Amino acid sequence: MTNILLLGGTGWLGKTLSGLALDRGHQVTALARGTDPFVEGVDAVFSDRAMSEAYARVEHHDWDLVVELTSSPRFARAAIKRLGGKARNWVFVSSCSVYAEQSEAGADESADVLKPLDADDEEAESDYGRAKSACESLSLQTRAGRTLVVRPGLIGGPGDPSGRSSYWPLRFAESRDPVLVPADPDGLQWVQVIDVRDLAAFILDAGLAGHHGYVNAVGAQYQLVQVLQLARDAAASAGAAGTTKDGHTLHGYDLARMATDRVNPWAGPKSLPLVLPPGTEHEGFARRSDARALAMGLHRRSLRESFEDIVRADDGGGIRSLRLGLSAEEESALIAGR
Ligand SMILES: NC(=O)c1ccc[n+]([C@@H]2O[C@H](COP(=O)([O-])OP(=O)(O)OC[C@H]3O[C@@H](n4cnc5c(N)ncnc54)[C@H](OP(=O)(O)O)[C@@H]3O)[C@@H](O)[C@H]2O)c1
Image (cartoon, rainbow, N blue to C red; front, side, top):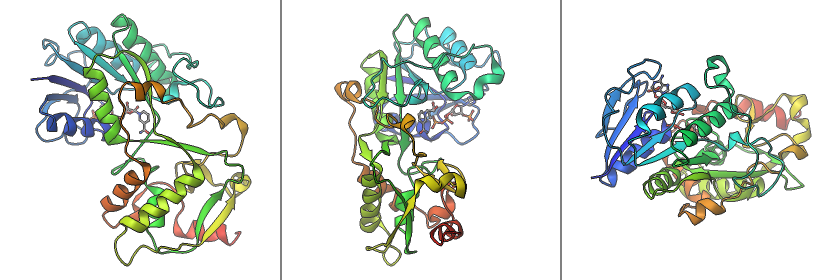
């Protein structure tokens, strides 16, 4: 029996990891406050990591694998000090947000990272990239390098709580016309989405295999125009009968207008999800090297499959259920040039 401890387990990735590990016959323990429910079948340890005895129930076990999901350097430091000595394998789930530059296409894991935060600087923890950078170095130092630092790019798939991977397939699954899409004549906009299910499988496989060091866990690289076409195709093949229209009319939106029209890039209200403002400083964004992850055995489903599953999993709320993107009124006003 393989014993796995998740430090987390109630978020989207944590739940996906829990379900997959249980399906594979592993014994799974998850430690969190329980803001959202734990997955059924997991040994749930309700614990607040801000408390001094947070790890009392899990520290005397010999874990085959610990997966750390925090973004707090204080939590990362305390956990690895208390549990790191006995764990056979340790994975820290970091992020590509640790990288200092987004301008070089194809950059691998040796690229410069942001200066790590001071682990005691509680107030600065909202500085996500620097907080993750601090967690990385603490996790590696304490176990003398025997840690696998997984750096995911954008995570997507059905159930995406951020909605970033859901907006375009769900928008194309609506019959409303025309659809406002970013005009990207230079093809400078890129997208790398890793499906949460593929990421979970990679973390378990690579973690239990004893890999260590840094690895980018990113999706295949697509130009934005290809992503929009895949979202359109997926909506046509997976949409509910009668709601999806095959031949949408597109309205190309000039990205140079974003600032004037107060359209947000990437995410958030009144935004174009997955889209960046035009500019050369982002040219390497979503173009990270995936060579090391593939060599370690990362298996990725196609983006079209992820998009189809997003459309199939929709409970009827469509893009109205997301907390980002353009509302129908905002989209019509932009198309009308208002
Ligand atoms: N979404 C993306 O595109 C993306 C991209 C790159 C990397 N990542 C990384 O991928 C991971 C995603 O994890 P996730 O989806 O499982 O969600 P998450 O929200 O990032 O997970 C955080 C976990 O920590 C627990 N937690 C927070 N405060 C706690 C406390 N005081 N005591 C105990 N537990 C606490 C939460 O549970 P409770 O609230 O129940 O305590 C939750 O289970 C994160 O590491 C994230 O930084 C995400």
